[in-house]
Image 1 (cartoon, rainbow, N blue to C red):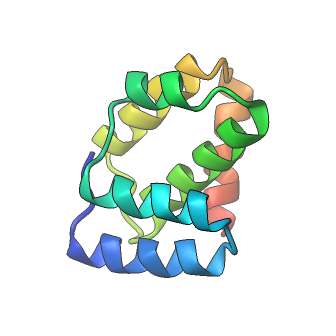
Image 2 (tube, rainbow, N blue to C red; image 1 turned 60 degrees about the vertical axis):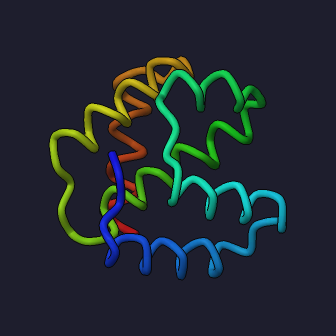
Length: 100
């Protein structure tokens, strides 16, 4: 889904706090303005450590405003499936995002 203005503001702060490389930070910033589909992300993010980082950040983003809605969950489920993440690991990502 797309982030509203408050979510974008919070996500920008999260990206800055995450101490990402400049390349990764730029990628996430571009993503806020032009979100990709789960298929596009899965095709472009192939390294396991990168997939973990992307999923972790997207789960945090989905929970950042305190509202984890069905379209966000469906998108994350689709992406996790494309990344080969099973239900137990998916639940772990959800829990980590809830706990902050």
